[in-house]
Image (tube, rainbow, N blue to C red):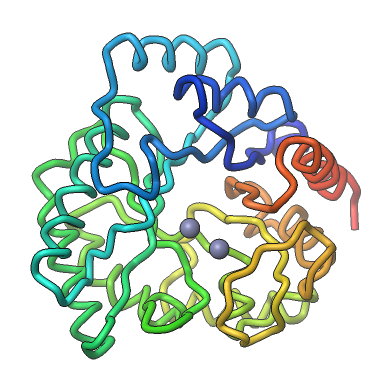
Length: 288
Ligand SMILES: [Zn+2]
Ligand SMILES: [Zn+2]
């Protein structure tokens, strides 16, 4: 069994001053993995990484010993967009994101599945599948696993019901490395209760039926300001929201979830992440 200190737990750290800085910040808070943006997440155009930045990243990765680094794709990307112009922009931005992930040899590329806007959810899901399959020839051995992030289902955003994620995965899994990153805040807001061990058991069973647990590759760990089924995405620090600490204790101890990489996106930044990472490892250390 992997020791509590070696479990992959980290946070979404900052790339300010250079992409390698996200690794240094991660190391400083006791993280063994991190999530980062490879470019400005609120702009269409991402800067191409320089050879120098890539080398520095590789060296820092080696020095810090962090593993299974995850990129979070830009927020503007909607691979299921019904508007042709924005769909093209999204597909191009996603391809550029993929190129940056390949250059940095990242393990995961996490992205929001998409939003249906004025079209049906079914049409949106089919368009996401069509978009993903465009990258089939692009996925060499350095390519990251693409992770669909579970969503809160606000507005016309798809991916809140496990069945929607399962629908996409079923249709691309034989052609691309694909999987799921489950965001605890989002799935709770989408209506999946995860506040107790019993509730988790049921939610994981639903996940397994609709998607298959073998496709669960990562967690975003966030508590939720909003209540169960609110469909609102508002992150809280662990134990400070509607979900509560029992959820995270369960994830750190249950054999099916203990060793899955986990990334905090809680408010409060490094001082709080430091404490949260420490607490999560304590959960993993203690025998229930
Ligand atoms: Zn996200
Ligand atoms: Zn969120």
